[in-house]
Amino acid sequence: MLRLAIAGANGRMGQTLVEAATHTADVQLTSALGRDSDVEAALASSDVFIDFTRPEATLKYLALCQKHHVKAVIGTTGFNAGQKQQIEAFAQHIAIVFAPNMSIGVNVSLQLVEAAAKAFGLDYDIEIFEAHHKMKVDAPSGTALAFGEAAAGARGQKLSDVAIYERHNVTHPRQRGSIGFSVLRAGDIIGDHTVFFAGPGERIEITHKSSSRATYAQGAMRAAKFLADKKTGLFDMRDVLDLR
Image (cartoon, rainbow, N blue to C red):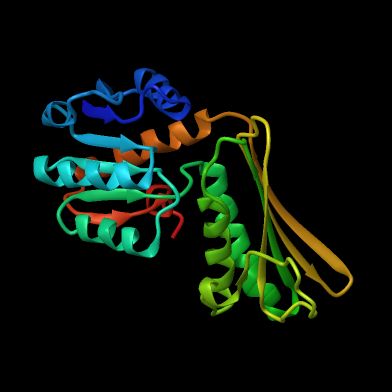
């Protein structure tokens, strides 16, 4: 039986994770952590820690996971480059699944985007649209950036070199090979993503829409089980789903 501790249990995603853990075979929820919980005590009786909170909190949790030799599933988004390097450093000591989106459908869509971008090349313009609820604090979403990285990598590019996040006051035509992002924040939208490929005489759209946070929670359960026999290393959902 795999013992799980879940952070942010009072939040919407945390509640969904707790619900999934209580209905998933071969796992046992040992701790559902709120703001004032004793994290170290929880980790002492856990095999895997699941966190979908904020970057600063996640890094503090990972330090404690390393101390107590507890594996981690990280679904938090909004990390900067330096923070991602810290996660890589932690993964030298504990096993971590780190993914901007735990949805199985999203990760299959990433494969489709990669294949499309490779086939279409620079002759097709790429635009990525994403929509989330009004409480989401990072933009573009981690998932949108993952789509951008998949598309750019398939074309032999670095996303940081070709991404366009702002077009206000731009007075020149679109640059060949660029990847544009647009963002909507409104209401209670759980998460919509569309990658547009626009070329000569045609447009292809790859879309994923989430209707429930349960899809992320189920992916997190699969990620936790994936870590059962892992000692160290940094993995993502493609590893979990054997999509490589």
